[in-house]
Length: 307
Image (cartoon, rainbow, N blue to C red; front, side, top):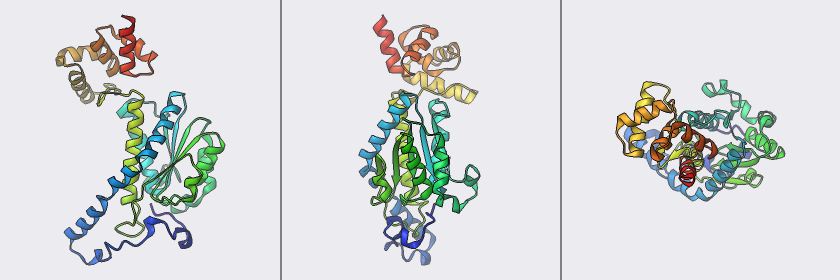
């Protein structure tokens, strides 16, 4: 994930500063090396916590965009891009959303996910080109440890010109690009255990932020009921068993009743849940869910209001 930039440009980037706590790392026994790395890793959650107000602003932008029919786009290179791809890929199976709603753009394309292509992250024009399908009202999220990766900056500038909202996730509070975006989530993780290896603390911070952002957005959009994943569909026997367990926990009813409701709802967990909790037919439950944008609680409120 090292940002491929001249030394003069990287000067002053916190992740590139030599870490005084790990200068002897190469002469230590294995366990001591691990303890040093772990000690550095423990600093990350607190740094993320400091940035939560900015994370909240970004989530609100995403929720607004998705409710209005827009999309969320991630842009990153190297580790940042791979983390973006991972987060976007996990949302459809976890929350049942259309894969086109949260899209990850990785510098160099999917071939660069498994094989590093270092020069593409320096290509601002490539970033702008990859942002070509960003529309007005969408949200573009750039992820870069230094906050200066040309591919990401180029993408964010193009997205802004298209009328999209822009968010930067970085580990550099002083990044100039942070002044160009609507929200700069700057997680000050400081120097890495191995200088410049931003796949470590900076990467961990980006993963935590992306997970928190996307999960919170899905919760706000009603893709959960309480803290249960109810937006999955029963596509195989393993998932069916998991979903029956979720229905049992959500309703307090027995497994046989929940399994029957899930089958009657054609494997749609939310339909089965609303049907069980409101004692209505799957058809009525599905109708209420369609009118509520898929939110179980809003669908239940609609049904109760009609009663």
